[in-house]
Image 1: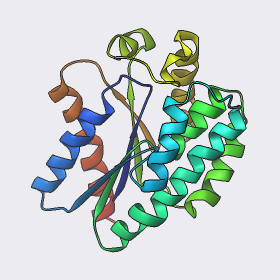
Image 2 (image 1 turned 30 degrees about the horizontal axis):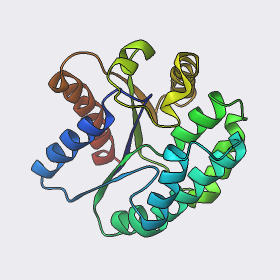
Image 3 (image 1 turned 60 degrees about the horizontal axis):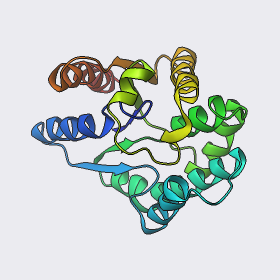
Image 4 (image 1 turned 120 degrees about the vertical axis):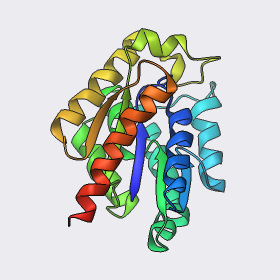
Length: 205
């Protein structure tokens, strides 16, 4: 399986990714995890530019293309080889993040970003994307020192949340909204229910 976790900053993706990976490993699966942008030498260099370079002006198109460059390397170097060897991959963000952050958030055309993304990834998309959902003010309260993207403020985060919800409504079979409120265990159980449903559907194919 290829799974991705997404959502606005502060919803708990990194924690839930670790919990989900552990649960799948207990099933006997070999699991590879990765993060966007990053997880490769090129990706980590791009990550530093995107999140930590406060001095270089960057338009929405340039920002989107940098994410795509990182993503393309991630697919080629890590994700596709892992899937071909029979492993399960869980990504902390994937193409949906660009559609929402640079599309809905920065007013680029979402469908155009999907199209560019299919080129960057060689049409490789997750079997399931789980969007952890919280009101922006609750998610922001969980953040520490903000990076360049996180510092864009509440109005931007509100656009992002609406963008995730809109894309999930467009692709309900591939993008599932998961309530990220409550304890870590409660959120993990909601995620696991969605993954079990995917496993059951694959078994029945």
